[in-house]
Length: 189
Image (cartoon, rainbow, N blue to C red; front, side):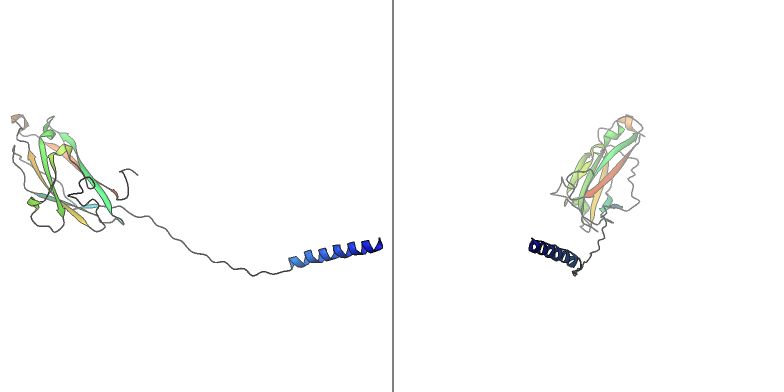
């Protein structure tokens, strides 16, 4: 029995030494880090000329105005954009006068001569103007790359059906240009 106690004490002592010894073992370690910085892109279009407004006076039924240029420029965007534009009839001095204003919109790329021969992307009532760069992809390139300009020429007409009641009348419209990143499947955020 004495022998068994000695063996048991020896085993307990060896285990205690092993446990204490394990705490004294050293291990080498290392680590590295990688910095990260992130920023978001920008969608920013502008019109050329920046101060452009459409102002037509003394319209006569059936006569088209001369061509007026307005270009859309992808000025500050960090990505290609798709865009659209539409007109809103804001005011009219006689109800229905805004319905009598027609528009032809022609489009091509900057630097192409002879705007009167450019493809027509819209012809109809100004109040119904709705041009989508993606929907007219056969004529408009679809997306507008960074630092690229798309030129448009507008002509306006008082409809030939405008009778005497439309003399001296006026209407105002707003043409709004919308842009979103070209990968957006719709037009909302």
